[in-house]
Each structure stands twice: as C-alpha cells, then as structure tokens.
Image (cartoon, rainbow, N blue to C red; front, side, top):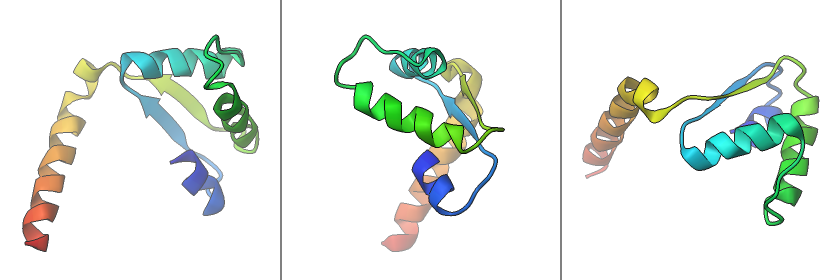
Amino acid sequence: MLFNSLSNGVKRTHLRFKTLNCQTLVHDIRSGHTNNIHLQELLIKIISLLSSLPQASISYIPREANSAAHHLAKQALRLEQQAIL
C-alpha cells in the first residue's frame, strides 16, 4: 500500500496494522531498529519511503477493534467472486 501510494503521488496516508507481528513491525518502524535480520532491508525501505510523506502516520489496530471493517472486506470479496462466476 505504501509503495503504491508513493508511486501514485499520494502525499498523505495513514497505515494501520492489526496482527501481533504487525504490532512488532509498527514498533520497529517507529524505533528505526529491528532484531529480525530478515526484515532489516525492508525496514530501511519503509523508513525511507515514509520520510517522503511527512504527514504519514502508522498505528497498530487490534483485530477486535477492526472487526466491522474485516467483516465488510470479507463480504465484498465474496460479492466480487460471485460476480466473476
């Protein structure tokens, strides 16, 4: 999403992550450091991209708090699949 936003010229975006691993990723992005060596290169890219979006914000949203949006997204996917058939 971040990469697409930047390539399309978006100047302001808000990213929300909702799983436990993403909570760790949000922390890593905010601190600029990760203990996971496999994520280090990606973290550097994310931080670099975010620096070009000064009004961007990143937050962790627990799954329980995002259940309505999750339900609507699943419903939309089912409708899309039915339309294709």
